Each structure stands twice: as C-alpha cells, then as structure tokens.
Length: 153
Image (cartoon, rainbow, N blue to C red; front, side, top):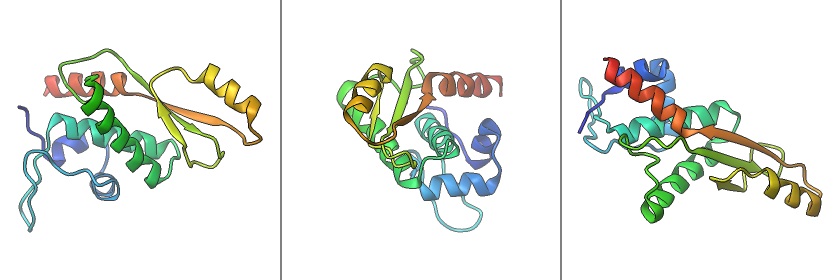
C-alpha cells in the first residue's frame, strides 16, 4: 500500500499548506494509515484519502457548502460499502461521473447520483417551483490525473 504525507498531497493536488489543512480539517478527512499529533509528526494517508481530499477540494471549489462536501464524501463511502464501484480504489478506472443536484439554487444540494440527471432534472423541474441546477465531478478524471502524477514521482 502506497503511503502519502502532506507534502505529497499538496504537490499532487497543486494546493498550498493552508488549503490542505482546511480541506482535511473542515471536511473531516481522517488518515487511514496513521494519525499523529504533535509538532514534527506527519499524518500518513492512503490513496483513498488522497482521492477524498481531491474530491472535497473540487466540490468545495465548485461553490458547494462544507456541509454538502461532507455529505457527498459520506455518500461516496456508503455507496462503496454497498456496491463496491471502485470509486476510491486506485486499481479501477472506469471514469465515473458523479452529480450533485441542487434544487434550492443556493449550493444546498439535495441528492447525489451517478447517472446523467438531465432527464430526471427536467422531470423534477416540471413538477417543482424551485430553480434546479447541478454540479458534476468527474471522479475518474481526478483519479487518472492523480495516478499519473503519483507514478511519475
């Protein structure tokens, strides 16, 4: 199992130390391999954690609230436990798109889906007075870029 520290993650995701700290703290991403405390000690993360950090960073940058980011990460974990799609597995690369559907129009997503929600969205929009929008996250592309950067190391 490959291990990653903060400096690796910052390099792979092209984020600074503050953004890294914000992402793992605000979105509750715990290291799978080793959690440490104290000055001079470093958390050790798994590839799954690196993907979680990358997804959280992307979703948050798209304008979704921290609550939605946490819910989205929790949903991905639940989906993985039930269906084992390989979203967080470095050995699968089936280029999944994940959608965050916001039926309030203000970054307060109501549900997440793997499927292209366009047809669902038009049905929901026809039955609803609320503005409907969605954000998409291409997890497969995020994974692919990370794997290329990691193997180039």
